[in-house]
Every structure is written in C-alpha cells, then in structure tokens.
Length: 318
Image 1 (cartoon, rainbow, N blue to C red):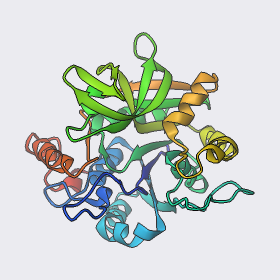
Image 2 (spheres, rainbow, N blue to C red):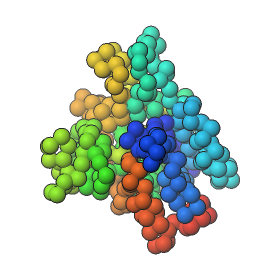
Image 3 (spheres, rainbow, N blue to C red):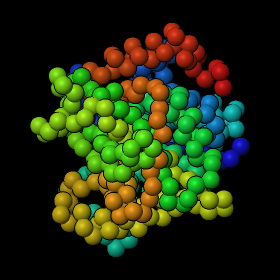
C-alpha cells in the first residue's frame, strides 16, 4: 500500500482547560473511552483502519514522559504488530529560523504551522495533519486517505470539511478556520482563522458578528500530497514562510504571534499558490476544549460503542 503518514499535533496544553483545582490539565491525555482510551486512540484506530501506515506525534519535551506512559508506549506496541511505524518530534520555542532570536518573555511555541514544520525531517510521503484533542470520525480518515493515495498537483491541499454548528462548545468560545467555499462545495476559496466563536439562539457569532452556522470550517484536518521520490511541497513553502513570519508578524506582536495552519493556507489561497479540496464528511465532530465538554465526549463515545461503530476493545478489529 502507498505510504501515508498521520501527523498528530499533541504539543499544546489548553489554557482554558482546567481541572477542579484550577491547575492546567493536559487535555490530550484525559480518558474518555470505556477502557480509559483518550480521543487520540480513536483517531489512531480510524487512521490505521483507513490505511495510514505511519503515525508521527508532535509533542513538547516536558510532556514526553507523561505522553509515552499514557499512550505512546501502548500505541507503539499495537502499531508494531500492525506494521505501522511510530515516530516522535518535538515542538519547542527555540526551534526558529536561523538568524532570529526568541523574544524576551515569550513562553509559548509558535503555533500549528511550526508544529507541522517540526516533523519535516520525518515525512517523505503524502501526509495528513490532525489535532490531538478532536474526534473526527471514521469517514473523515477514509476520505482523506483515499484522496492522499491518488496523484495530485504538488500544490494541492485537501481539507476535511465540518459544519460550524456541529463544532461549537456549550461552555464557551472556540477558534475555527471559517471557510468560504466554491459553488458546489468542492473547493475552498478562503479560510479565516476566527477566535471567540460562541453559540447563539440563531446560530453562532464571533465578537458580535453573526456567522453562518452552516458554513464549512477547518478543524485542522488537512491533507498534503507528495510526488513519488519527492518530499511534500507544502513542507518547503511552510519553511520559507516561517522565515517571513519572523520578519513581519513577530516584530509586530512578539509575545503572542502564532504561525497557524489555517492562516497560512488562507494566505496561499488568496495568492493563488494552492488549491484546497473540500472532503465532505458524514461523521459528527466533538472535542474537549473546556473541562465541562468532557462529559458530553464520554457520552458520545459510549453511544458509538453501543451502536457498534467501535468495539469495546477498541483495537481488536484491526
């Protein structure tokens, strides 16, 4: 089978996600399944089921021990039996373009674009990117894998499309890449990273501006092709533009500037440098942004098991 990689961005600790004692929790490692599986387990299961044969985790050095104890070692053992490769890469504040320095008092890494770029030495095949703390559903992985194994122009990108109203939290604002799509919903025309999106009586809004609840949004599930015997084109352009980011965005906002995938891809779209295919999905997204979201996620997972979407022993059908 054609090699395909799933890159899981698991380096972040959500500042809005607090335990009852108000200390930060590593939300990617919170158990939600019948046997203490975490959301990543379901993504890994679905990716392998769809045909992905390599998993790359992006983590931070300070969570490496907890991460491997909670999921990494277990997944490595499962993947070894299934001939699926597992690799790790670190996202760090100090990993920046040559000739630049980290601004004084900056504490957080540089966003999802940097997270993907940290895996550049490890990825030499078509690959998909996901967040660690989002549940995307089996269908999303299948349609993405099926797209990746086809031949595409090197500047083609795919996005698993989710509907905004199905991606909101009942417990506070969320950030989504809100998309403008072509007629027929086949391709993205523009994508704008939008923060503070909240549910309203009529749908959704951000900073008082109403949003179409039926609009497509990016949940950071992207696909990037690669020509045979060639590294993915997107990694090269991502690296080039990271240097530009340090020349423009960082001086303007040294403590908070972030190199984000939706923002970067949106810019490439506006410049006519890429095409973005919308891969419509039939599954409902859910995730853990706030502590209060966890109960709903546990109930959703239990329902998927009870209706036969997953076995109670999650990996037993691979």
